[in-house]
Amino acid sequence: VFHVSQLRKYVADPSHVLELEDVQLRPDRTLEMQPVCIEDSRTRLYKGKDVRLVKVVWDAKTGDSTWEVAEAMKELYPQLFPGKP
Image (tube, rainbow, N blue to C red):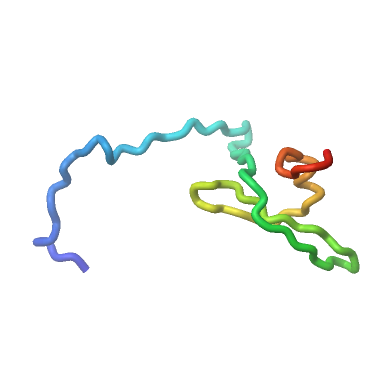
């Protein structure tokens, strides 16, 4: 809770201005993000089969990450997987 006496006038400072990045949108107005790196991997049992999952970091600044199927990620982004092509 703020009291009116605690409010002060804002003094403009150029260092407070944030630079925006150019964002390329698809025609359907979705954003394609490129993965940054693979953080972790694990194997899960799904319908009686072992499925290898990898934790993909999508944004280094915010740390956004998701678990994805390793084979699908290897097809789309082979540069994330060192070693054999």
